[in-house]
Image (cartoon, one colour):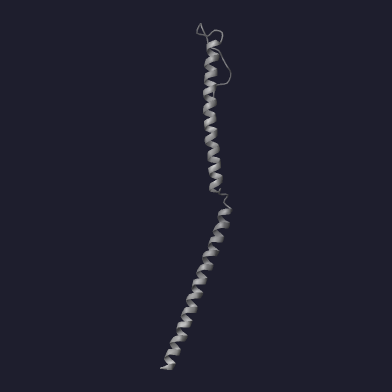
Length: 101
């Protein structure tokens, strides 16, 4: 009976060692995969979330400013058209390039 217990103990030690080795190999493979994925993604010129949010806020501010400037330009054009010579008799005044807005 003594020899059977010893044989069983040795078998358990081998299985535990193999399980630990397999778990270590899995962790190593995972970290290696993550590192390679980071290197690959870094080469694709992706932006971080913070950079994206900053540019998004800048674009929103630029749209608001463009809308405000458009409103000011429309008011100035209306005022200019009202005070321009020939406005009373229905004539038109050429004020230059057409508005792109």
